[in-house]
Image (cartoon, rainbow, N blue to C red; front, side, top):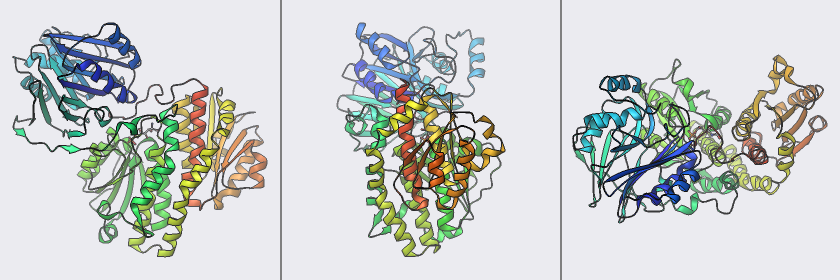
Length: 608
Ligand code: M6R
């Protein structure tokens, strides 16, 4: 959700900033802009829409400078317009600033500044920050930024430059990610690693309430908000630019769908040694688990669906009740949490604002915090008591695919580990499930090899105004995830409905040729759902059924059967989601949408 970059060094900042923004464009793509300081001048260019437009402006009129900042926007305050695009400037256009986050008290600050005769060109919350800096500025940029951020409520990662301090870049972080890259050619700042890896593998992760000053004479310093200098640890990262390329695929989403078998194999290789789960220090001990009186899983979007599926696994394996909550709901509802509660937070990015706030709330109540995260070194990994990484590599497409199956896997391994430690399953039962898990990558590969079958379904549904998913129990969760995938990239209204609940209202929506996608993988509900499909078919629905069965009633009532390999029921969600990922992908493609960057969305949702 918005990406910021900055550079201070001996190269031309323009190319570096554009390059960095390109890597982060998936975070927000409503508008983009950059400002450079060079030859004592501050120059800014901005454009609406994709980064390509900014590149064009830059090519036609290259601006030069060794210090610069850039921004790619996902609009929060104010519509998509040039005036609202970053960087924002003070009135005399001597200071430029880029911001990721939200300033909650910007209206109060705006009024205060207006009383001091400041005027505003944009509707953003960000513009007040640059005007505040202007107000406090007396030649020392670092001090002016520091005084300003102390007035802010909300979240921010900022990059600031000034024409009057032409060899300086200031960066500051509070509750929005910001990473610093160090190289012989200069210093970089970025909302994420992807835009740094091309230039350096030496990085520093900024923490909340830290401010950094970079200068052209090869000096950088970090301070806390009392202006005490602090020493920061330099981390060597091993992410390569290859892992964030499309690797020959047309879209990141397709590449990431295809990466699922290997992502699962990687985790299994790391975490299963001689048929035993090895979570080591990443998870809690037998004694700690025995003390847990409640288990919560809290997340957003696809990560939440992974949690909801895992609820079935944890409950089945351990006999313990699991409560799943959407982070944004959890935060504003009554919480039944104490120091004996295990709270599991699931997040691909580890930067989702709602989930981070939920974590903070759970922590305040004393709960034990486990984070299941893909992005190493993200904020969530630093806030949690224990962290289990997904190890599925960077996920770039906004529609989450490989992170989902990886999250499922980590959660299932936790469930089995808990069952082992609590003694709720025998060693043999656990081994049986682990052996079946080992077969999942090959079974996914079988579905991948039939990917073209899903193009026809996409053709059938691409012009629909509504599509419905249905399922029972764990299949209902896979239906919810399938529906989310389809709606977010095809823009077709898609809703998932519990099959047994249809007759309580939703079946009224069925007409001739209404498109239904059903998920049918569970032995103990197959007959029930078969009847539900019959009810839908008799109202004229066209049903596409993703199933592990060869069930005559299901077959008779389906327009098309999407047969997936058999597995034990509890593992079916690993397989049943793959057809839905393809259906969403091909439908988006057939509609000519931007598959990887769907409208109105952003990869990392860093605002509440
Ligand atoms: O980074 P996170 O896993 O915390 O993100 C959570 C959701 O924003 C994310 O899963 C979102 O729902 C995806 N766009 C779904 O494909």
